[in-house]
Image 1 (cartoon, rainbow, N blue to C red):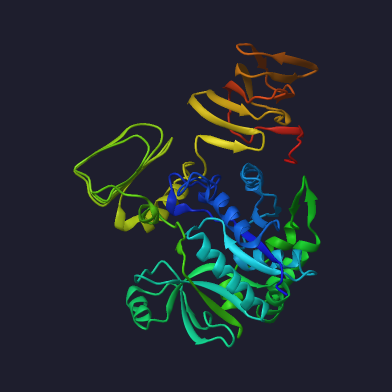
Image 2: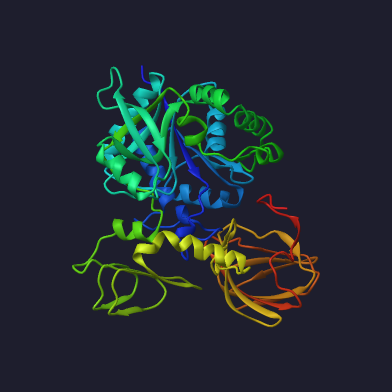
Length: 471
């Protein structure tokens, strides 16, 4: 009898090589970069097609919990969402997922939330093969046929064919991101695959192997899991124990050491969507090799990616370029250097700039806000509050706020007063006055907020009550 498959979706990536579209507060897995859905939504639907209606376990950073919840709800997927207080790489995340279903001992299908896969039937077939191999006591990984010597990937060299499994092999060795010359040698053997970072193994078996090779990671993960608490339907891991957990990938912690590693050759198309070059590879192109999104006008342009959705982008006489426009930043790069965009992000961090962190539109559990204008001692924002949602009951020590209702209905708490505002009505919140904004209606509430004061930072918030559990 086949064992139940539980998808585990790892949702902690940063996607810095896809800046300026991917940011720390809105990384690539939450963006519609390949299809009309986000990468996370595509992954969840793919997992459902391969594993049935078993709810996936999603491991994510606590800062992204409501994004995960909302995006999965949009496609009708219910999940067990586990919150990490900080990233500790994939070994700790896999350990937590295995501990969450240790008693039933299903096959865990571990998937990254930010990959792109084409070929649904081939993917489902590969998952079933991997699950069968895992049920026989192996720890399976999915190998992607290496078509070029790309030093941005890890490699797997296959060994002998597994007994009773014609299309699965033992792993001879893993090679972590080799130089181009070594990658060429590996490919020339005809036994090399790219390491996809996707796995299938029994929950108890991977815990046993973690206990054998990295007992420190297992012990910290177990303590974080046993001290976890329910938080509005999310499982929040014990912070102190999880922060003490060493950060290491499951590949290094277990797969490179175990005697039970197997590789399943994948026959589906796969991309880690790791750079703008990868986006260009995946995209449909015109006769000149150009991939575009948005309002784009091309003249004498070849083999380029032009990506934007806010304003007209025109090009003239360029080749092999990446041009990506966002609300507050523009990237222009040689396509061959797309992997180096991460270095731009690191420079922004060192310069204490904010463009690596967030867009002008910042998502909150109640909706979003976006900056419209700013200057000395003032700032203008547009707020969207979802139906039935509410901001926290709060006050500001250094700024006052003026709210104007653009559309929808607002219920405003201002000190001891409760106000009901309709379109084109407004109110003023003085410095130091407790206040709350709510949307009691069935349509989104749009507000223009004008802030004025000596300090306008987001940390000038003192919360007294918040339905989303924020301090």
